[in-house]
Image (cartoon, rainbow, N blue to C red):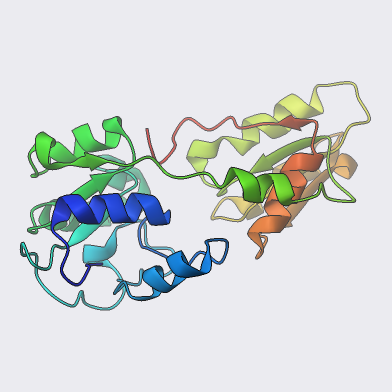
Length: 239
């Protein structure tokens, strides 16, 4: 996405103040009306659904190339590099090539962590040119959500992929002598295999796969209702 006339440094400040984080800027209905109107004036790049990459690679074409008057600002949640091999298999060279290409597009890059910024610098942009803006947390919104009326004692929430290691969580939960319940919130390519694995466990009748929850508030409600939040993941976007 790009602003109308702001230089890169002022644009970063504007993005941070508006609470625009992640791959693209999105309209936040929780902001005061004046800030929402300011958000509405920002041209956006829309990502393709499920695309792990950032605006230069997804959705409709960006409206202009990078310039001092119209800077192209991009956000990287993570840099995959060799991780493409496990994600795309024999098509990994394509993913790596596109990731390298987009890293070299003239832009003002933002990374959500220092680790991501360091990795991005290995692909093209000078490290000192990469701004680090951590993902935001709307604390007031979280506090305003009541716990789910019917929740779980132990909860996992996330994409069901190998790096999340939900299989280990299932096995560990099955070994505990308890009447507690386990909720698995989310969807992904491993869901069918995980559900089949759960069916073989003694604790099967206390394990629930909710699937993807459309409303973010519902995810927060389940988190607030749970006594334990379990995340056996070994990979997160900011690491």
